[in-house]
Structure formats: C-alpha cells, structure tokens
Length: 315
Image (cartoon, rainbow, N blue to C red; front, side):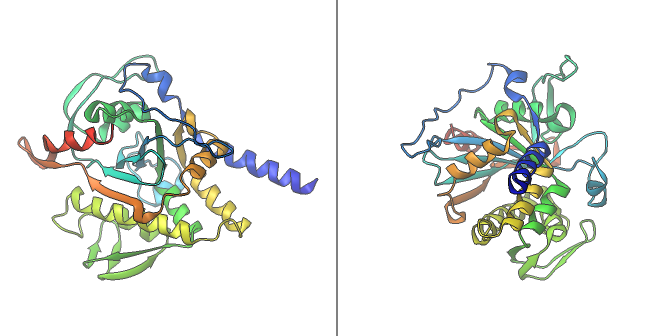
C-alpha cells in the first residue's frame, strides 16, 4: 500500500508540475496544414508520423530561482532561445532549426487571454512575440514566417534548464575557442569541459565572449548543448536508478510549459517512447539562413529564397 501511495503521489506531483496553454483553441483553424500522423504496427501503438515542435528557452524572471540566474524583465518572458524541432516520419531522425532572436519579422495579430488581440507589427524583433502575447503569439509568429504547422509547443525557463542538467549529472561539451564573458560569468578555455547546470546555462546564454558578440555565435553553442544533452541522457542509466529518474523527471517538468497535447506525464512519456530510435548522431542542427537587416546592422532578416526552401523541406 505504501508503494502504491508513493507511486500515486509521484505521478500526481510530476503531472502537477506541468503548466499548459491551449494553443489549438486560441488559434483556431487559420493555420498551416497539420502533417498526417499514423500509428505504427507495434503494440501498444505509438505515433510514427513527422512532427514539428516549437521549443523556447525563456528568460522569465518569474520566481527566485530564475532571478538568481539572470532572468529578464519580470513583466514578460522573451524567447531567449527558439528552435523548431522537425522529427521525420518514423521518428528516427530530426532537424533542429534555430531562429535568431534578433530576426526582424512581421509579427501577426495574436489573440490575448483578455479577449483582445495584439496589433500587427512590421519589422518587429522575433523574440517580442512571446513577451507580448505568450506561447500563442510565439506559435502564430513562427507559423506565419515558416508556413510550417507547429504540432506542439514546449517552453523551459532558466532554472528548469539548470536543474535538468544538474539532475543528469552535468553535461560534457567541447569548445573550439576560449570563452570569457563577464555578462554571463563564463570563463572557459578551449577544449572539453564537464559543466554543471549553472555553467551550462551560462554557455547557452553567452554571446559577448565569442565571435562578433552577436546572437548568431551563441546559436552554435546552443546547438552543441542540445546534442550533448541527448548524449548524456542516452548514457545515463535512468531506468536502473529510480531516484535519479525521479530527479530528472521532476527537473524536466518543474519549469515546463506545453500545449495541451503534452500537458500530462502520460503524453510526454508517449512522445519519449516514440523517439527511442532517435540518437544524437541522427540529429541535424542548422540555423535559419539570415542576412544583415538593411535598416539596422544589429538585426537580421531571413535570407531568401534559402530560408523558404529550408522551411518547405519541413512541411
């Protein structure tokens, strides 16, 4: 009875951690066509069709942990990191496309929870969509500039990312150059390093210590981290260590916001099981092609037709 009660409380606690937003109801049917998802022949049946997931790393300052890690303005959460994760049919290969936060886009009118809507904005920075209209506007903006239907949405904040890395026992990454960034408090020599959660977060956020100090250099480091985390998860014996499994699950869900299609432990577990054949070496990371914006040397715009060709390959 004690074991059953403990398992029940654990399931309830992890489910309770997850926050969700009903993207589908908010946006209605005026969206790109959803890819066909067909069940596989395995038992129990798992989805095997292609899938597009918008993953955002938020600089929210909600909560003390995020404040201590350098979150943004407490009045909003900008998308410090934005990646469209396209999983091929069969769920054994994936393409991760990073969208620079400084990209100038046409931000569409987005519905707000108050019943009102934001105004269309031309030449707006991409990361303002999440700040002004939350996940609904972030998804609508991505769909409007890519023509790709986002099947799911996942957002994790600073403290959640750091806790996840710590729960996994850290992450090993290799940098090709020295990184010294007073803003992110990161000081790494070129080479291989095993980072704790706070250091990994600093690496994901650093930009002034690499390249020309723009967001484009930071994206390369973020993509390295994605692959390193996948490798760390594959090497961690979670199924044979229930205590570590719980710590990882608690960290992964505690600072997570999803769409309503992924807002339960069962749904997340099902997604994870459908991706069991996806390994780090089968994940391709790219950045949306961009060029310097004519109106502002500190901003970029999509490079056409290369950007449209990339998005077309994911539809």
